Length: 317
Image (tube, rainbow, N blue to C red; front, top):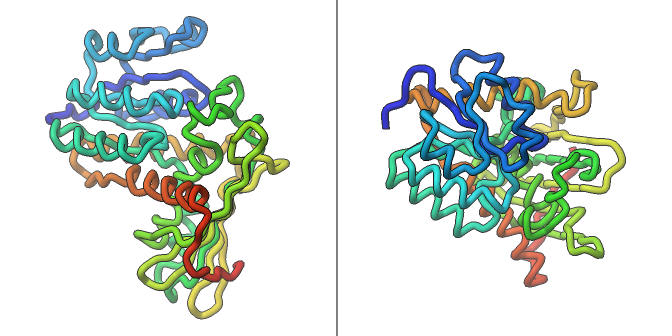
């Protein structure tokens, strides 16, 4: 499909994360916002004055003159909205997770290939300045022996008015389904393909998984641990590495950003730039969203069947 030099973007969903997309679209000249969509009239009223407004994504896809959409709806709607957008020949940037079920993710990847429309998952943490500084520091050194990603917060504070986060059916689960993809993507950013070797998941009385510890293993021999927590006072988002020579280093994703969710401002600029680079052909697009989704599914599978393979010890950096 042919995309103009400055693609016309429609934003579907005006929830708590939408303000970071809107800020990036206002700041960057690499794309132009032409339409927004949300079923809530009050949210639509807050959209930029010059853009078209729609209450149904199917109406937007039919009527709006656009090249691509950003899908920022609750997790359970990712699949149907992305499916409809790809079927309409529109490129898609979707918030993680790609879908709530792995087979739906596979279907979206097939639709993308069949239609020739880009399917891009927004993993904003891969654009974090501290994460990328860590990658640069260790790039020329010994290989990574072990890695720990911590993703800990109080979910009620981060959800704001988007209470669907606490509904397992809408969210696709809890901390594993929603924060897991970002954490797993960071593991893959440092180690490449990995597989889950053990997982422990703790749920609250409503069935929401609030904490999880996940061990992963890379073909290089490196081991990784992902620590997820939705009940942690305050917030901690870090990547910690131990290199083969014993050197330890870390990235604090929140460093230098004292404002609540402040780091997301520069991260979503990175998302927008990368997406438009894919649309222009300057960057190859890979189905990374599917890889992270399959790691989520593997984590829940270990929980369901109550078994684990031989434990891979992950030293704490």
